[in-house]
Image 1 (cartoon, one colour):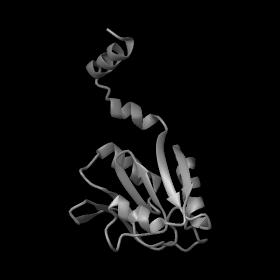
Image 2: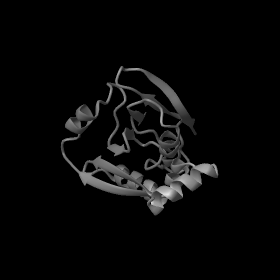
Image 3: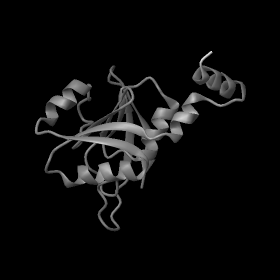
Image 4: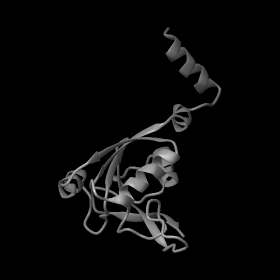
Length: 149
């Protein structure tokens, strides 16, 4: 038996899950953003500061990225990211991305529509707008995943 398989079997017997192990490892996320968008760069820094391994790709055709990702009308923002099997649209906090990956719901992804002040990457001094993180799926269904500020 391979050592890796034996170790996983032992961890399972002791009550550890592989997802718990993955939660401690750096999670890769691929961000598509405009080359001129400062708030997108600030959101990338927020992800890196929260343990994500970020690959950022500058593009001038964000519309195609959003359509290809299956983003629903009304959920758009300035940047689009892919992590695991999910789409992340806009200024979604790292903690919500981690929760999404941990809970693994059947969904397309998360969105913070628009660019609310006070969301990660959109810090504006003391101004903190209330905003919702929306979970969405391919069928067009949405629900509130979390609320902030």
